[in-house]
Image (cartoon, rainbow, N blue to C red; front, side, top):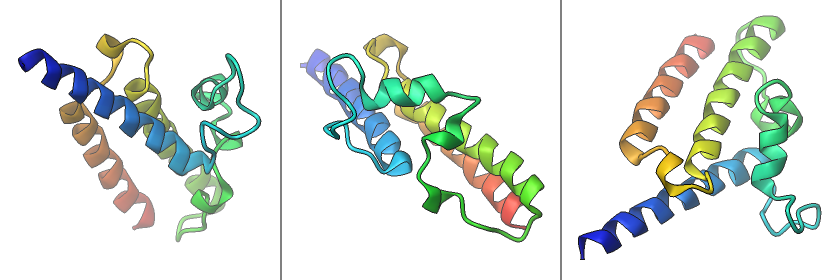
Length: 119
């Protein structure tokens, strides 16, 4: 039925959000540090947005052609945007999640900003 499609789309969005969080933190929801009420999503949420670089895996913080200060500010903005997608998509409330059309718009924005940073 049409309702089943809606439910599975919302579940896919949720899984996509968790996948983004996993990719950028290099942590799995089943890691030992996450138990009970303290989840991967909660860990990222607590760092968002001010301390986001504390939860991002270092290999995502690579050098580029810009100066370290320019890079870190611009890179931090991109990481905040990416993690915002991950957090929105993995919201406990299905109605609060971004839909994939919105995700694509955000990803295109991020892609554009990345090209600007890399010059």
